[in-house]
Image 1 (cartoon, rainbow, N blue to C red):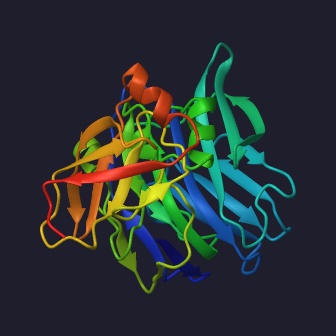
Image 2: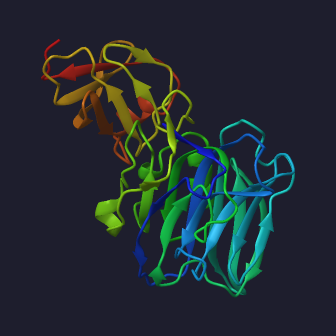
Length: 310
């Protein structure tokens, strides 16, 4: 569930899009695992039109100095996250965000769940125009990245501090308020699809050159991942999209019951097939009080699948 980049301008991922929104604010983010080799500036996620004459570019980097995060806005600020923001060979969420301020646009750079730096600028976060999502280098083909990238996403609004913290702590971007969804590339398995294509019309990532897939090395982003007939001590939050692997079924179930330690059903939810054995169900944003007591505390939760055959 990650992609491996080799610091070559020939090897990158790109999806074309056209942003036409009424708000100038934005969020660009990705989980990154930097091996601290390659060029001086190493761009792992960027947004803007392609080619040497491209414009509207915003990008987030690591730097040759160990553990440094950096973000750049064309015609606007550069944000320098300081040392130890992105530890070497450690999955870290890095976020570039632009929100409204009485004095202009407030730009912030996050690493993990910590805001590293912010500054005011008159430059808007997103403008209408051709805005491709490029992973592994800048839109103009420079600052190639060496390391691994996963779960890259773009909103045409500035996420709140609480939303950024929730993603850094393991929540899926799809569990957030859907307003402003533009692109989300989980990079699950061999797939490079945009989970939010129905919201924005932005298509899938296209491989340029060679970008390897590494299913064994990925950040934990889904709220919780379970196998059939097992229990978990993970907390399942309201609004979470839960992934389950139904590998022991000859006929897939259609719903799932969440049982407490006394085998009392607390919640019954529709189970939807995503691909193959992978299914999902969604915890309501505001579950009943009884369900909330069970779901929001640490403790074993048993899944009971309904409608399938083993």
